Image (cartoon, rainbow, N blue to C red):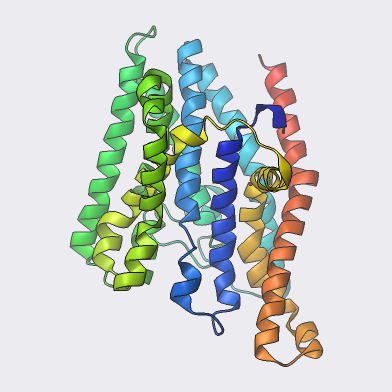
Length: 372
């Protein structure tokens, strides 16, 4: 990956997103020894941060393609090939590895395992317990497939008013998905966190709006650039407040399902959108923190894929005997497991990125050059 083309502010957001995911998942390793509210106060919704950032970046790519080409079927397929080279190899590598490990250890596999290969496992029904973190990848892939195709069939020959068509698509999907969530909240009356989590937060049909908020940011940054940048500092400050408000709300009033059902997901998406004008203008940095956050950003996709099902669910339980032989103190066992989780997540993600993800991206670049 060419570091010269990176935007440090967006790397910060990506790094914060993945570190929030890892931090949130690692709670389960020390659940008996920490205060849940205190621990989770810093546990931001990293996946929603990813969604909005992805919409901003991919939306920007789509707008550039739309503005510089006819956006015909060839352009559409070139876009898909580049995205799939970026996302699918890593995903299928980890998916097949987890399937192989499950067969080897005799663990349960879902009856609809085939759906994981088509990203259909959580389209409109709860995600199975196997490879649980794949729920967000499914939402991303449906965005890559449906939105460009919808734009493609919407454009008339020529380029007139394409920017307005894009905006109509973005706003329409945001409104439609928000209304679907509201309808489901009223109809199903989710009264506990797990139900809301499985039937609202983790479905394709209820989460595409988060990515579209990022797409809206990309549209604003191109077609309304002056307005986009004019209020970047107050937007950033207010975005930070909104980003932490769900945690403040939970700390003060406990788990509020009315807030979760009607406000939480939209608020976090809007908050992330408000951070983007300022962060997208922060081009570079320096020092140890800069290098660390850039590294985390670069390996973030691999970190997301390996951290939970592979490291926490599969590898750490297999190390139980070795840990117990070292100490029987429950607090020490939790601390050791916690440390191992972070170390293995960083180590495996670096290896996966270096020896698989990066070569796949280099192959993508060679493929793209050969098909220009």
